[in-house]
Length: 347
Image (cartoon, rainbow, N blue to C red; front, side, top):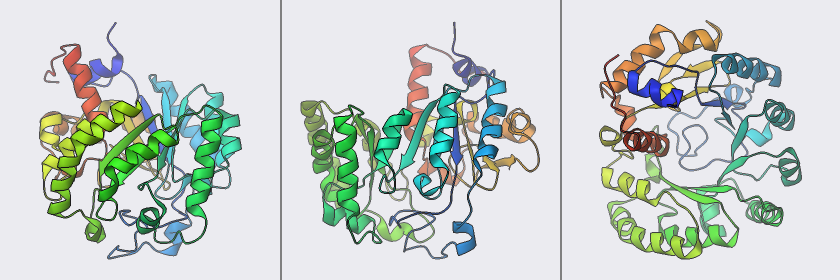
């Protein structure tokens, strides 16, 4: 039996709802990562305070999830935000509600404000922990607002998860301030029992270009990748260094050779922002509608979404697609199509 999501990709028509729903729960954050398009100190136009105070009620998210589940095919929910989800006052109630629906739950977090005991007790399936360093000085360089015990709180939480036998994933976004620690990031993951390390070349804009790697750093990273692969193999730490190497090869400000990979997100994924804006992918520029206009289920099968699906299938990409934030997932779906020898046919 063909997976309905794969069949949808191949035929150009969704046969189910998204496999993964990504919900933003808050715009507020406890730090200011140098690469962040919403909180970086390098932003040419900082976000207003009123925007940063926005968050969504748990009841609204539950109603959204139930609507998506009625489409069929929903297996996982990613909880994040343009800020830090663990700053939401009802985050644990939300996680419990999602687990009660038998969904795989992932939280994208810097972990510092989280309660590790409650995370373990709730049975959260996965954390994507934004570390972005392998040492305290580099951690502070990437998170300029962290000036107290944040590094040690992160390590304490990682130690708690290690004791509980809960290996979560580390995320290492590579920028100018941490590019020298690629190999050390592998060692860090092994020391703290990471399930995997996902490397990503920082997607930059709106002033955050100040954090970009230099061409000398790019060359050094290319040289370091084979050694990092071997070190990860020796430690038994899974990585996505193959995808990261392709990002490095894209050159300039590009972080994804999207023409070589393809975009499949329109059949398997959707993101909903705090204000109800519904996105085709994680890119905030690719809007398909708003929950204020129509329920998600109506938007999913609507003209705007289908037009974007057709555009991506025709490989008529947007300029921002060259900084694709879902490159790892697109590679996975491309490989699944290839493995099953499913041709992508005209709709």
